[in-house]
Structures are given as C-alpha cells and as structure tokens.
Image (cartoon, rainbow, N blue to C red; front, side, top):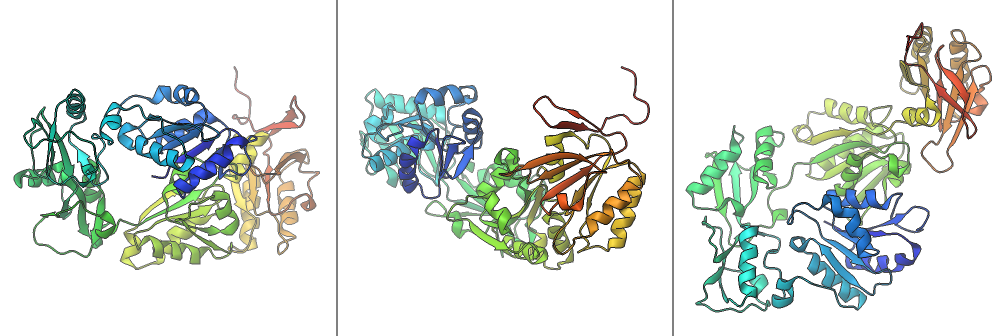
Length: 545
C-alpha cells in the first residue's frame, strides 16, 4: 500500500515532494488554509491521521514525533497489527521510524533517509545487529508465531548462533552469526510443523487450492491441507471457476482463511485440489480477481462531507468513470488509476463501459455527485445490468455507496426545511413527459409536502420552473418559505431564503437547489444574519410538552 504523506505547513511541501519521488503515487495531505499545492486537503490533523492509520495506510508525517505519538496513542493496542509510521523533519534533516517494525518501517526509513541524504534513526536492536528484521519476512512469506519469534531474536541478541534450513534468499546479505551446528534454527518450509522454542518458523506462500463451492469450505480446505502435511500458513490463494464468481461460499472461505480468491477457466473432478509451487506464488499470474463495480456519491462537493466508505473505494479502485466535472471533484488520482471521462449525457454508455471493465477483473468506480441513487448513476448502472444477458456482468461484485444528496446538504445549511414529510422531484422533462411532472407537482402540493426541485431550469428548458411555481402557488400561500442553495458544498456556494411570492425563475439556474416549504414551514432570524428555516416534526395541533 502506498503511504500517505501528511504535512502541516507550506514549508514542508518541498520535502514532501522529494518523498513522493521515493513513493510514486503517494498522495500529499496538506492542512487546509495552511498548505497550497497539496494533493489532498484536510481540516483536522488528528482525525485525518487516525483515519489513515485505522485504514492500514503507512504514514509519513512531516512534524514533531511527539505530535504523532499523542495523536495515535488511543489506537496503539496490538504490536504486529499496525502500519508503518514515520516522523520526518520539515527540512528533511531527520527520519525517525515510530511504529510498524513488522510493517517494514525501518526499510522505509532507510529508503527515505537515502533520498534525503541523512541517516535514519533506527533503534530496533535486531535490525541494528543483523541488518534485517527477522520477524518481518518479505512478501510471499509468513512468520509462524510472533511471541516465539521475539524470544528467538532475544536469544540471538544474547550471543546464540543460528542455522538456516530451507531457502531464505532475503537473508543472504544479513549479518547473522551462522553455524550449521547451532541450536537455533530458521526453518523455511511449507510443511506442517509444531513450533519449538529453538526454531523460527517461516512459511513460504507456495500453495494454491483449487476448489468448488461447498458448505463449510474453509474447514474442508484446512482438513485437506492437514491430511497432506501442509501448513495452512503456506496457503497463498483459493482458485475457482470463473462461472462461480458470485458464489458466497467461496468468498466466505477466502475470508475465513485470510487469503485472496482468484478465478480462471478451470475444470476438475475433485472438490479440492492442492498445488504446491517451488517459490512463493505471484498472484498477478494466478487467475484474476472478481471484478468490482462501485457506484459512489461524492456528496455536495466538500471533501469533509464525503463518507469514509467512498474515500476508501476511491483509494483502492483501478478505474474511475464519470462526467468529467465529477471525476475531477473525486481526485486527485494516482498514476496507475485510469480516468474515463465522458459527457454528462452518456450515462448508459458509461454504465455499460463500467461493466465491461469490471468483468475483466478490474476494480471500477462510477462517480456521481450527491447521492448516486438520487437522479444519478445508480439507476443507470442497475438498468444496464438488468438489460444484459452477459453472464460475466452478472458475476461482478456490484455495490452502491451513498453520499449526501444536494437536497439534504442545502437543507442542512438552512436548518431543517425538510424536517417533516417531503417530496423530491426533477423538473427535467428529458426522460419523462412534462404532463407527468405537472400531475405529480399538483398532487404533492395538494398533499402539503415540502418540495425539493432538482434540475429546476436550463437554457433548453427556460419556462418549466415558472409553470411549476404556478402549480405550487395554487396550494401554498405567498409567504411560504423558499430556500435557494447554489453550489452548496463547493467553492463560491450561496444560500438565500425567500418566499414563494417573491421567487421568480430568474433567481434560479441549473446549479441551484430549490426547497419549497409546506404550510407548516417556518423561518426566523439567526443571530449571525440570515434566517433559520425549519418544518416542525408535528402536523396539525402542536403536541403538549
């Protein structure tokens, strides 16, 4: 995983850019109002650092080590379950690894220090003595037991010698006190073995299990490995037929076993087939993952109003599709993330393209502003799936991730104009007859619902809003509060409170959200200027108390 580079001031940006050259694709997170030119902005250092840490993102923070320690202290529970965390001086004069000895923090510290022309402040005894962290084998290998490993390293540091059994090429350059007759042994093998105090067991990820869907599949895989004398820790992946990508038992088994699930055109008679390679498996060469398609809502535009699940999806995807304006709002993106920008009117083509990419095993995001289910891409994507007979499309892992809609964001700015029953409507007649819009407007107004208008007016639809206001006015008084929110959540946002009697179409454009109150909606002056608008939770006679 690429690290996050977090800075607090403009003076750190030059050093952050140097670190970005060490980790291409890493994003620089700068404090809003203090840093210009960062890839991402944030408003609160502590919340941002903790969120990245909890996501397992390696952290390079250009600030004092004490600030990082105090910020992350509530999260420091289990050693061995932490990402790498480093403090780097603003001017690049010091590199201090703080956390993540088992996550490669010292390797990162040395790489960063080399790029900055300084020495890394490594304090780990084992690394200083042997030049490597024995408890953090490279990718493709897994340590059997951390606690036994700690005692093993302590014995080495106390003067014991060691022998290496099995292939451990990453230790060739290590400064280990080797002796073929030593009591201590580093044992590297996929064979099932009971850990002993005098052994450091490391399992190479050399095993692939090809399987069919079945109940209790994880337990059956474990039993098959045990019968074959193979350690479950050497299991690198499960492999199954590409026609079974959506089968829940396969995904549950992979989750329980903690290994990736891959798919290929495989045929076999046996339910479980075990294959052991000579070297750790390169999973990029084993089948393909199940493709994923996430339809996301960015919210109104402000980064702080984007839900965490959407941020995480954007961070891990391979492809991003959407209207160019919205794709830009979702960025910045890494060099390896492909952007597919299209015109706002090409929704069905975009949806079909997304499925084509996801069916290839890619992780795809389709971007909407606001909420994807409110006059946005979710319906188009599901419609494309409904119309498709391609079985590969139906095997894609499809998820809709919500966002804060424009109507809710505007309402929140004004107070609570949608605090009771309300109706959300689009005034665009591009995809539905105007006669239907008029009918629904009339019925919703008769029902005394608060109203939220999307797509209220455009150059090609200049008269519809005026007609809509005429229909509403039949059932509302001229004093009915109206909220106009333009570009809420984006730079230059404006919020205005007026009344139905004062509202004219000229006050509105395509980027304006129009909220019209019900008969109970109220407005009153707020202390800092402007008005609060709300619709009471009660209807009819106000309840006592």
